[in-house]
Picture 1: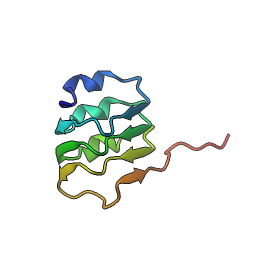
Picture 2: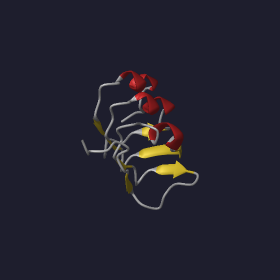
Picture 3: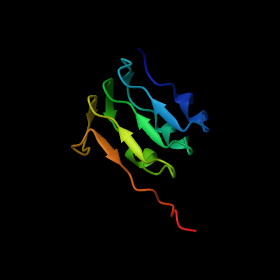
Picture 4: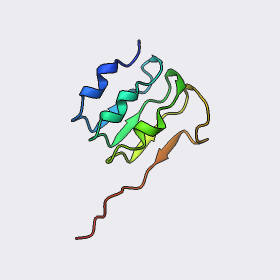
Length: 93
């Protein structure tokens, strides 16, 4: 219950953030864009509102998976409840 703190951007070592079914409200802080080690973001089944901060979140270099459905986001968002992102790094050596 409650909202995500703006200080979430200080959690730079976090790799997975799972906050499903936690009754969170409010807007997503743009500081999510500072979580440079984040690989998975799961925030579905809450009551988040406002615009999803695509510019900040989708620029995260290690992000591969987002689940954000079943919220009350406004604006244009993809129809799917989840997005799988391609890794920008090559696994070839």
